Amino acid sequence: MKQDMIVILDLGSSENTRLAREIRELGVYSEIYPHDITKEELAKLPNVKGIIINGGPNHIVDGERIDVDAHVYEHGYPVMAVAHALATCEDVLNAWSEDKEERLAVLKKFVFDDCKCETNWNMKNFIADQVELIREQVKDKKVLLALSGGVDSSVVAALLIKAIGKQLVCVHVNHGLMRKGESESVVEVFKNQLDANLIYVDVSERFLGKLENVADPEKKRKIIGTEFIRVFEEEARKLEGIDYLAQGTIYPDIVESGTKTAKMVKSHHNVGGLPEDLGFALVEPLRQLFKDEVRACGLELGLPDEMVFRQPFPGPGLGVRCLGAITKERLEAVREADAILREEFHNAGLDKKVWQYFTVVPDFKSVGVRDNARCFEYPVILRAVNTVDAMTATIEQIDWPVLLKITDRILKEVKNVNRVCYDLSPKPTATIEWE
Image 1 (cartoon, helix red, strand yellow):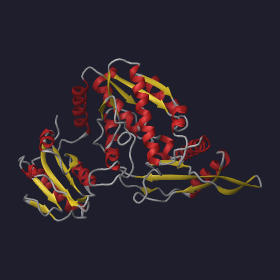
Image 2: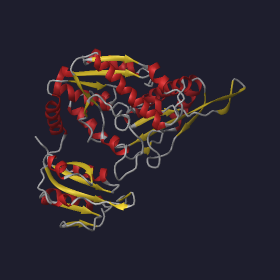
Image 3: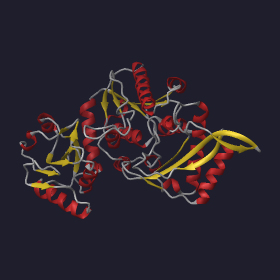
Image 4: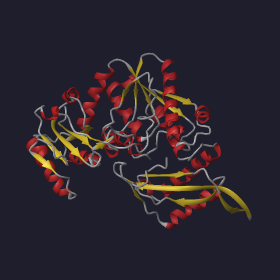
C-alpha cells in the first residue's frame, strides 16, 4: 500500500531530521525536500497529505533570503510554517518548542486533524512499497550491488533478493581497507550460507596504489568512491544485461554530504564521490531511512540479528581510520588494534551495548620506551559511541579494567605502537569518524 506522506521543505532549519523522525514516530511517513522544489516535482510525489515549511537560521544563502515558491500553496495541501513570517497558511509557528510533548501536540493536530493522515508508516508497508518500486524500475534487467557485508548493503541485498531474486549480482570488493577477517566472513555468509550470486574481487594493491601519498580526507574518499565504481564497471562488462547499480545510501549520508542550506560535513563515497560519467542508473531503496530504521527493515526481512546489528563500517573502510597518507605499516596497525578492540568488547558484553567502536592511527609518532630503549612509534586511538540515527552521538563510559586490558594487548601485540588513547569527544562537535 502507498503510505501517506508529509513533505518537509527545508527553508534553512537545523531541525529537519528531528522533525522527520518525530512525524515517523507518529506512524506517518515524512520526507525532506529543498525549499525550491518545482511544481512538477511536488506534484509527482506520491500520497502527499500536507506540507511543513521548516524555516531556520540558514535561510540566507549567498547573501540573499531564500523562500518557497508560491505554487506550494496552490496544490490544495494543508500547509504549516515554522519560523516563516511571510507564510499565508493558517498554522504559523514562530519556532519549534523545545518541549517535546508540546511539539508533538502541534504535529498531531496538523498531521491527523488537518491532513487526515493514516498511521500506515511501518516496515512491512515500506518493504511492500519498495519491492513494487524496484520491480517497476528494474523490470527484467540485472542489478549490480556492492556487498561489503555491512548493515546497509546487507539490507539492500535482502530487499533486492525479495524484489528481483537472481537478477541481483553481488560484488564484494576487497580494497585492502577491510577489517581483519572481513572479506573471508562476507564470502562465508553470503556465498556459502545464503547462496547469493556473489563475485569476489581482490583489488587491494590497485586501491593502495591510487591512495599513495594522498593525505586529504576528501580526496581519499573521492578516490575510493571513484575506484569502487570503476571496479563495478569492469565487472559489469564481463556480464550481460547489467543496467543498474544498487547502493546502501541512507539518509544521514545525504545530509552530511551537504544541502542547499547546510554546509557539507563530509562527502560519502556513495553520494559525493561518484564520477560524473557513471554508467549505471542507481537503485537506492534505503536513501530515506535513518540507521535504526534500516535495522528494523533488516529484521522485518528476516535477516539474522548478528548481521542486522553488525558494527557499522564506512564505505572507505580503514582508509579513513588510517589518518593522512595511508601506509601499509599504519594500516596494519589499525587492522590489528581494531581486531583486539572488537574481541575484548565481545568478551565484556559491550558489543551488544555500544553502537560503534573502532581504532584510529594518526600519521605522527611519539617517543616511548620499549625493551629498555627509546622508541619512536605511533599512538592508537580508541573510539566508542552510542547513537540512534548517526546525527548525534555520545561517548560510552568504559570500565577501567576493560580499557586497561585492551591497552595492554595492543601495546604487546600490535607492531609500531607505543601509546593507546581514548577519544571522549561527542558528536557534535566531533564527527563519529575522524575523517
